[in-house]
Image 1 (cartoon, one colour):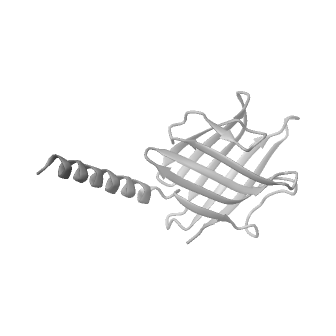
Image 2 (cartoon, helix red, strand yellow; image 1 turned 135 degrees about the vertical axis):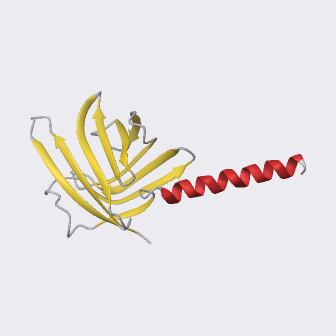
Image 3 (cartoon, one colour; image 1 turned 45 degrees about the vertical axis):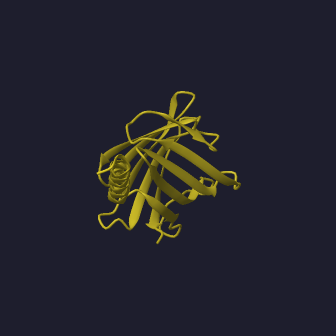
Length: 156
């Protein structure tokens, strides 16, 4: 085998492994909010569309929706499911977020602003991979705790 053929074979193998890894990640893809099923209090932000995209060993999560003030929001986070904080852009209430896989269908997130925890989020994807439930527990500046539950369907 020539050196070029070996390099091409190695690249093909790497791509195949990356595709398999992404396919095995039930979180990857586009998720649309099911507002009728969700329990989101009036005046709370709504994440209408959430996209998880894998690139190498990193994940980018992009959120589109409506903020608590009624204005459109676009939030982005890129990092790893390693429990370490990575920067968040587009969310005035959060500047860092960490994601950690609990198991193959469950993520735990912690959001921080200026080092202080502002919310914790539990994401659970159904066994069939078609729906996900997001439970967010937040504490506002006055110490009032709120919990929202949002349901999402995987877009085809």
